[in-house]
Length: 453
Ligand code: GLN
Image (tube, rainbow, N blue to C red; front, side, top):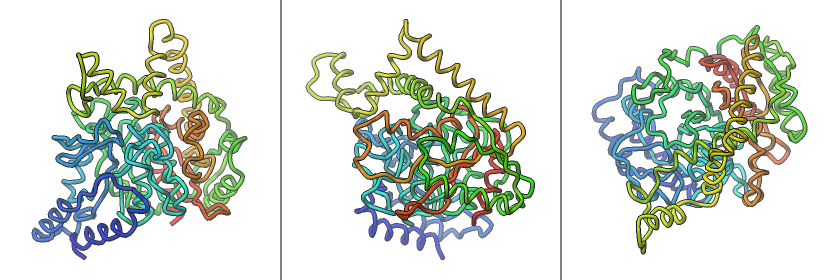
């Protein structure tokens, strides 16, 4: 098959499903087809596994000449003049940018319902959310609109939608992948990662996007291995820690059952399972929402109505430009985070909130380091539940925040984590099993995850 065949079949699938799903904000149809035709003409190197294959990008990853909205009214007319490093790298590998996927506004949310461009729907049940914030990427892959998509994960935004859509999604180690060109939310948490149906496909793509980038000083100098070498490797002797806190109160019984089944399968293949404690798990959510919102309040200062993005009309003076542009350009969840973060960082409250939360972050990190010192993986559910109904949680932010309880800690600790499909609940909705590894040991995740295929 040629690259144009692949692009055309993706475009056909989008044509067939996306009016129901709304997984894409922008379909890059003309340019994608032209790129595929050019590549076919030039001839594809059969050793290059990624060449000619279409991929979609979450809409907070900037793409030169292709509108990049971050799911926000603020950026609905933003056409970047450069590519994110990940885009550049995949383009150099010959991948074709098929389009930009829907997301919660500025990646703040867990259901893709805070998008300015209307929610995405879950392909397994159109009345349900696809999770978020990378819900568009997850739904597009699950529905077969595209083979692979990139997402971003600040507190679970790759893993939770991967779980809700029954696909594989990996958030690599903090620093593994350059964040240059990722529209920042919480810079000390954000990582770009990969979402695919097959584990091996993610291994190919993660290998291609990893590595140091001089444009991102937080990207690691550690060389990235070819992650495909870990696929289907023997897992005999793999040491797995199962935290009691990940199976406690508030976690759906059917989710627990499916994940326990997955653990039994790994045990049968020779993995060794230990039960452990991560006592600080319960402080993850409050600490994260203070820290991530603080970082967001600072990162989002650049949207001032002057430099780029939305500018309000009928303004009287400079203050008016700022106030009106930000009031009209941002949605309610983004405003909530900016206010929360500004408050937590303000003089007089900094020690009580930001500093306290930063201390909690250190304790959570230590919790993880202790357990991972003598285990290869921590395994539990990805999310406390399966995909919920559209509208069910959107008016109760705290309820939604607490759903992140199992994913946030990996971002706090900077460790790699993935969601792997682990069966279905009694409504036929996919369940995700989370695998968390030591820093720079994505290999153990690929090993264990590929055992399920
Ligand atoms: N649900 C979390 C939040 O709203 C995580 C989002 C993310 O990982 N980008 O902040």
